[in-house]
Picture 1 (cartoon, rainbow, N blue to C red):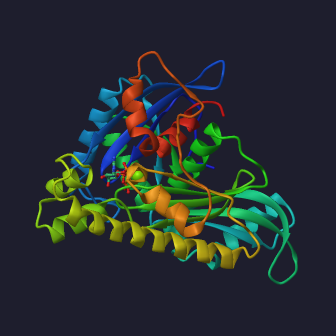
Picture 2: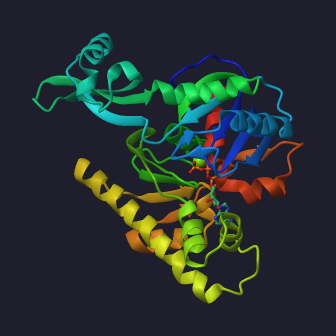
Length: 352
Ligand SMILES: Nc1ncnc2c1ncn2[C@@H]1O[C@H](COP(=O)(O)OP(=O)(O)OP(=O)(O)O)[C@@H](O)[C@H]1O
Ligand SMILES: [Mg+2]
């Protein structure tokens, strides 16, 4: 359910706050093949609080990323997330798809806490259901994304000389990446957590449809920040220490600090799971998959599993995707789950 869509080969372009990631897929006999990928880091002041603050720097990084990946398609599929995006399942008082359209045109503001003129609205039908007032209705997944957020993304892509053909929602891309790689049990409820540098995208899905989507402002930067503050380091020194690049000499001081952030992330996940269970009493989460760069964080997946008791795995967005002849498989493996959203976006550019 992308917000804007045309059909042609596309590069999936994930504009994160710590890096720009791009993936190109093609169809192969067995399914999909990874044709190319690239990832370029961003300075810490390019994206601040989820907003692109330095558009020329972002455009330059996008250009570099796309040059590094030697992609053929000119068109890109990108995604938006964060507090400018809301995805909700609602039951509208309507009996037919046409009535859904009419009802949402009239009443969308009752479901969305934004000024309707400021957002791009879209929806996908789930099926007939009863409204809260016990009238026959239609259940839909309603999507609202702030127009200025979409425009900021399409602008920098345009500045980089590319054409933004698809604007998707990151949480949907995450689900597509999951479904392209794992056998999905129609009855299983799966929580997908993509933990990046500044944001955690959460999509709890069942039967190929999102049940519950939410983005929370937590991520790997918090590990870096606590090391930076407590040990009086620069951001880069703290980041290197977090990634274990300068030996383990401070391990005794570092471990408890890192663990305090892992606990804080678990608390945020707990809040979301609690809210999910309140919204869907009786639903049981069967499996958790984590992705994003921060899923590499030592001890995070096991702590999530231990805290909630659900089987928890790191999502491999290339589990069922063949490596193309030109890609460096070792590099793909090391980035792995950080490319999940870029893979999901790239899937918009191949026939699904
Ligand atoms: N091996 C690793 N161990 C721990 N953390 C890692 C590792 N590799 C990457 N990270 C962290 O992952 C984060 C980057 O993840 P990702 O690329 O998913 O974020 P992003 O898309 O740029 O940001 P966001 O989506 O939050 O705006 C950074 O905080 C980085 O330090
Ligand atoms: Mg990201």
